[in-house]
Image 1: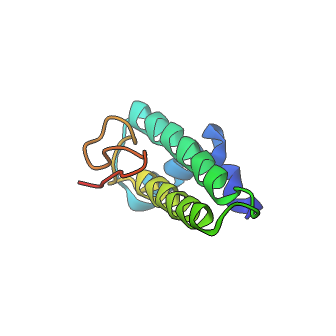
Image 2: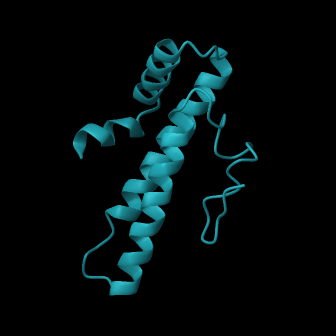
Length: 104
């Protein structure tokens, strides 16, 4: 888990995006790489906040937290794809990460 948690850092998330861009040969501007890295770090932090919630919470709260944590991890993975959305806020593919969020 600690290895994945390192991507809550914008700097390390940026290195991840740069490596994937290089591996796939998909050209991205510096601004897009920076935007993706910021989005990945934000999504990863959200995921760990949701997944790391107290185990003494009620069962339904734990299930919902795990659900939203998983959605945040999926969002980070989409952002890490060079051909994926540019960021989690302005791209129309991901509308919001609030309860009841949808992918379009």
